[in-house]
Length: 625
Image (cartoon, rainbow, N blue to C red; front, side):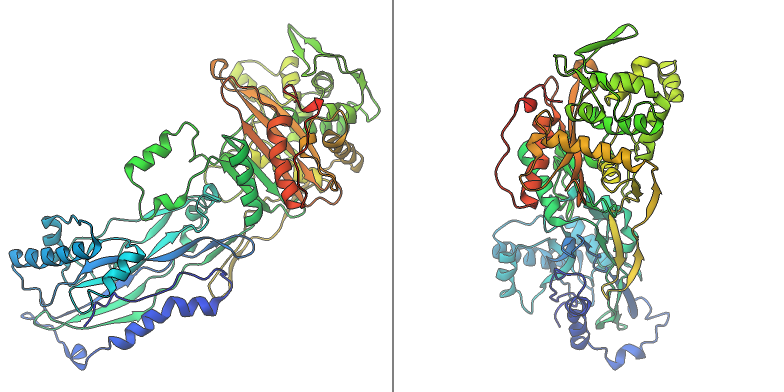
């Protein structure tokens, strides 16, 4: 009789919403196995006694279930399963070999396998004997995850002998590094067992989520084990083996991600940034369509297990590929924060849309001189003009007049200073520095100089790229704060919904339509008007609204620059809200208009079918905000 663990099965199909096909592909091997290995009448007649109980026995062992899939919003798998084939040795029963004979038997078959595979296999004698004594009636693994060519070579040469090919499920990430920072990875719950076999033990180790969605939804992705029955007579000879219950696959997790947009976001980062992040949100639902961090990693490196050397390489990489920057890293927002300052100023009545302030090259606040990014006097500007040109000195004046408390209040209404609530471990909440924070950190209350810094998104203020995209989605839809959503639902292979995460309004931020329209006009002009700072994100036939930003952060000796571009498109009836951040190197000069806006511009041109790269203008040069 051939090994009871030899069968074939295909990987999960591409669409998780085809339950009948999935069921057939998953379970026909087990059904076939049950037909081929039927119980004998003798099995049910075994009556263990004191003399026979050591030999005559029945084991019920667990077969690990295939893990559920993780898909994009259209059902395209981002994480699924494949069959991995391991080469094993089956010892004959009853297990009455001496140690020497057991080793001879194993060595002979290992040599045969080495000859067929054309490579050496190192199996310690101690491991062989431990397996033989404790669990010899189960196959002994001697080679894992065979290549297709190796399996084909073995298939024709090991039939009927002690060598068998055993299939097991392994996780696979078909798009490799794509969305790796969100999907996460899995790891084995234990090493291969080598102790005395017990009823209920797994035939091979299960896997569990260790990071990302694999971790958060681990209990739902983990299926229910099947049961496999083995029976031995009083002489220790195997009399039957059969499948009692097939394993039940885990549930499928359907995300809000759009695979094409995710690909475009990661491509833009790969081509234009050494480090950074891009988030794209649907403004009228809060759905995250893309959330890319760069650099990233391929979760397949962790399957079936990652080597110590490779893991150390990832950990020691100065660009920190294991850090999901989109939701776990925080940066000062720079001039993108002028949107929150402007809303606060207009809504509190500190300024009106007609009020004008001088856009001077510099101004003194207390004992400190604060500069504009432009070194020439730009004249008197209203709010829309100041936002378009990103005049720092205008916002210093207006921010101080408005006050820290209203600015922090409106920033909080836009979602800053709090986690967005995505189902991912370690999401950062950012920081909105209030008097309590300043007292605790700097032993003083907020001063006018602090407010000036906050008014251009500097100082102690920190936000995540996810929060920035979320705030732009709120402005884009007119002031509705939707609960940001990364997962739509969890469903069975039979298409039954187990858990649904509906689109939900958290609150209305309370800004007037007039204020929102003023902000929208300023953002459109920032991309399209002659004096705007984000021309390299503009499109020929679609109006883009956005704001650039440039901010320094980190200790002075290691100060770096975060270059931002955030906004929405189309300006009327927006489909996408977005945020991009580009991390500069220590000492390098990068700016939102020249570093971040081109990344979004590349994505939008691909999305809306417009080719070509926008030419630089005077506002896009090295000094662009």
